[in-house]
Image 1 (cartoon, helix red, strand yellow):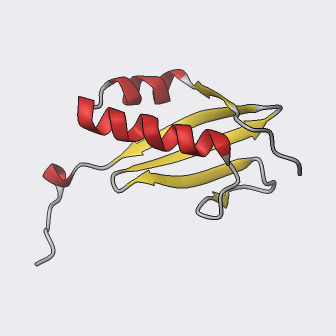
Image 2 (cartoon, rainbow, N blue to C red):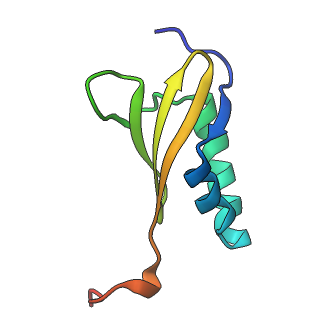
Length: 93
């Protein structure tokens, strides 16, 4: 499947809300990771979810996992799962 130079990045409303709630440091990291992903949404670090290759998942940062869809030059971030070390019940020693 041919890839273009950069994909247009879109967010679902829930993913955009989660993105907008991030503190400035984590938001900057997310934005940088999404910029990299927009150049190669089929990166070897991502994996398909579901039956086709277009629905994918990737760990963008140490604390953010994204589910996204690739279609017709667009990268749609559907779900952002954001982890916070402050909410861990049992911390590994």
